[in-house]
Image: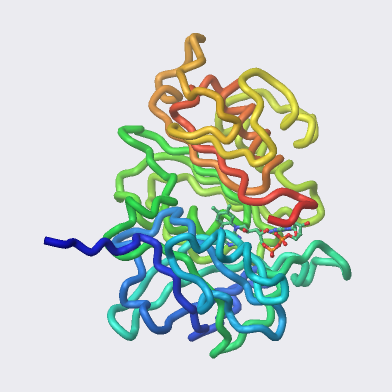
Length: 328
Ligand SMILES: Cc1cc2nc3c(=O)[nH]c(=O)nc-3n(C[C@H](O)[C@H](O)[C@H](O)COP(=O)(O)OP(=O)(O)OC[C@H]3O[C@@H](n4cnc5c(N)ncnc54)[C@H](O)[C@@H]3O)c2cc1C
């Protein structure tokens, strides 16, 4: 008897079906196309990550040249003119059935927003999204429906925690939004979301027990207000130090450049063990923290929560989604 195994990785050409400008900094794009009836995840998308293959200008989506098995090596082997750019995004939602099944992605238009000066940091993905029109095509790597576990890419895992601390910048807002919209009505906790402008406070359905804090960054340094608010939420004394200074300080194992530390994985290779022996409040012991956004702010939040806040590393997920001055 022979059995055929189907790859949990779905490699598709994603066709833009709808473009919706949500706010000055965000555009929502609905993708569909051949094979989309198989796109997962089934159920809440949470922080499900996906990969987008952004075509080089004037070239077709490179997905047609690849196969799900060994796609990365094959993609790297493509001539540079055909390769385009590989970027990580979040499945904000997967909707519909059959030919009407769509994947929803919310793109930050960094470098293209009204507050961005000419020459502000832009990249191929944000630039593509800023100009996307119905019918445009890109490559997509997403979980096959029903095989999400084998594909991986969902980090949110609060276990039996009784209180949540959720922190996001604009790039992690799609994930945070999807997470909070999936939570049971009785969930307790706090959500801190920092976006470029008050007009970017998107329509997100929070459960009533989640205390929500929207922060408009404006001209203030990235992450500054997030850290101050987090300190206040944890009952800690104010601290005037800059985010970059806090990020480089403090106890615990240093995170590497990529800042990815969850209860089951650390990008620094450090062992995830319980490190705090200090007495901490019961509500801290029962808390799970999910923090995602720019690497410096994420690092600084980690210093705060695991250092002064007294949380243990198995209670936290810290994820640098991008780094200032560095292409992904
Ligand atoms: C798991 C995961 C999920 C993500 N989900 C989303 C999502 O749903 N939506 C989303 O918009 N992004 C998301 N991101 C972030 C996204 O991958 C990065 O912002 C990425 O750098 C964008 O690619 P790019 O080609 O536009 O810019 P790049 O070529 O990677 O970078 C070019 C320049 O722009 C800067 N830059 C990159 N992003 C920003 C930004 N947001 N603001 C200001 N400067 C920036 C870089 O530092 C660099 O200097 C996610 C990242 C990860 C790891």
